[in-house]
Image 1 (cartoon, helix red, strand yellow):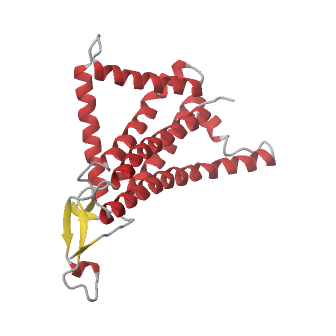
Image 2 (spheres, rainbow, N blue to C red):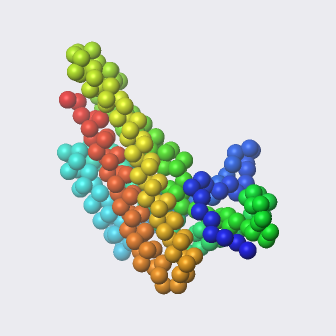
Image 3 (cartoon, rainbow, N blue to C red):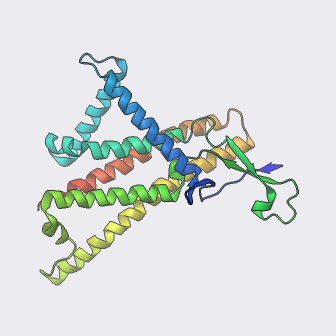
Length: 255
């Protein structure tokens, strides 16, 4: 007999040179391969007279550039930081959407009862999914958050200089400025926590909701929740990239 199993931690599948490969890490690799293949395909199919798919893609790029121009204040800055923001947005979006495809979470293997420490678990097994949404693993969202915050500070150093950027956090001009600078420094770590737990909480909650509804009522009922998760996946990718955009725009200001 198998039972519905919901785990906050990602399940380990195998090891490579002593490194544990989890189902969420495997899913992130699949997402990366998918995006690389898609980029190569688009590059080779780009035409001077765009067809339907290229028109849609170019419209999305123009929409994002227009939004960024409103935040950065110039088209030049929007185009300069577009690759960073667009990469974060597309990577999170595709990762979220791949995580709710049919078969994701339902293809896997059964773990014997001995490995789950059931005292009277004769014939009881635990299902281990082969694939799982990447953002349902806190390690994934934490890595994204750290990367985003590091990029914000790197862009700030490049735009204003190392000394000017660090003076935002450490200054002896006055006690008030010193105190505010320390708060700004602490806020950088708060951004990491906020970024990672917001994305993880929403995606993991959606995964649990879909798993429970599919387990209790496998037909028709999960469909509206599936559509909701498509929307939530888009919103979470947009929020993460938008916040990164705002933080970069603040970090590169000289005043």
